Length: 575
Image 1: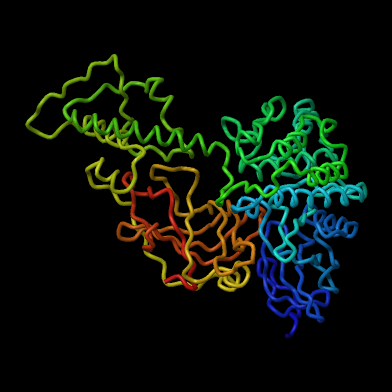
Image 2: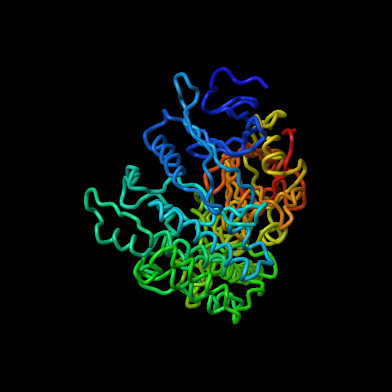
């Protein structure tokens, strides 16, 4: 294969056959916000991953690139991703830094752990391997600072956990990346002492928290808690984000109360890792390893106990309450609908919704669309309904608007045919725009989907727009869908489970258009929670497999209302 003589534009992937550091590029493994990762092969046939990072896109990107290269040279362990080489490319007028890494193939730790059928012993063995990785890292003076399941892969060949991505790691030889109060990382895994520092030094110029060994260990506690229970130790704050007050002052619910299959001895280790101060946790990763090894030797723990007999999707914050409130909201909607249909000649006065109704109504999961009709109907037990006067001509416009609003409010929570029947009136259709012509998939999309992700043309999976359930959602032309739960590559059996093609919470972006009363969509990019971007070619379908979606009641000019859960299908061309 001939090598590319000149680097391509930064937005284009390198062509197959390009030679970097003596290795030949065979394809794209993924693209993130800071780098593109390629599959490369050495002259001897050894396959590895090569991360290519632009040097001319700002100091932060360059610093992260050098940081990963420098930290990687200090680490060598089976549970740490190995760095195999680094350099600049091209040799003349270099524009990139490349870092060659061991290619670790396998699912993320949460996808592996919550797949169903995992035993207590298997889960604790993976956590012990992470602890060993941190022990070696900390001994070398390197803090990871972003320990989470997404940065832990389970090698499908060895079955062992591998800690990856030291791009935000710290070592005394590396300059700080911290521009704000906290170093880069993920807030849900941030230790209580970090939040306490933030409160104590809020508004103080130049103040920034310096992470320590205890921060990495706390993050391991969060990881273990999620593996044992399928949820985070603390629920989010009322308006989203982390509930800092709970992290600082409340104890997490004991894991065995969430999942009765969790042994108490395992729970004790988890809760100690989640202690409020670093001093109350383990003195270091070595001490944690010793504790886990001693625990593993105990005969009074049922290590063969299965934590989840069937696949369990990690519960997102507030998901359980959202489901409960949605059920209550639907029941209320049905009752209101029956009341209205049985009292078609009566209209209650429009007054603020009373507290009892607000208390049980499901809260909106997203910002509501701009109002397109009259205010909602409100009911009060202490307000007598007002009789409408019978007229021989059409009803006044204000009355018609109130009734329409009342109907929509009464039918809130219903979808599809039930909503149509409840409304009993034709819907307005959004203005159509010309359907796009047949279109080829983005460059490299079919190869990426089939070779890298292990998907097959025609394969489908369920996706959703947001956490909304039980009612239609308002979507925009520039659409974003969410992969809820891991999209498994059904054609790629690893021997221990299906390969995860796209992890939970991957975002699919594309375009929607309306044609003859249906919404059609073409999605061309998938972005994982870790920031890796793949070109894709996915077509929007309903849950029955029909291309496009039926518009839901409430649609109108410039407003598309659709079902909350839909599907996408892998295609090799947009028709």
